[in-house]
Length: 146
Image (tube, rainbow, N blue to C red):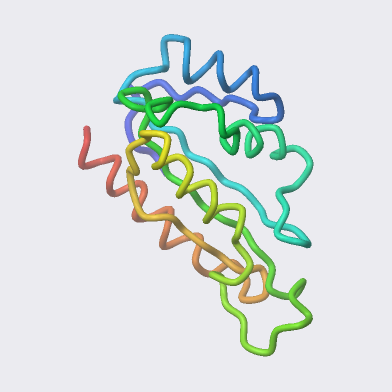
């Protein structure tokens, strides 16, 4: 999807908390107009995948002040879950298999981040049908800001 050719997009790998801290909390991107989009998966035992672990642990730190993200970023979170991994449940949906995205979304707001759009939650078992509508919502909200 094309939003605008005049806006810069920066991809920051979240596998190292130092990279995130430098890019979004201390560097030139640390401003209220920066939109950080977090796409994370929940794997077995409500855990993040290995490459997202550092980012998730960074935000879970209890030593962060409640103002860590205030006036620094807006955020959007999309969860990619798989209720097939929940063998002990008979009736499951996307909300049941996206604990990492749910916790991250709540924590980013608690640290002073401004939610840009509602959290998206998808389920591999249903073919991730929830992803496209969430992307459409995100793009529409971005266009409103241009």
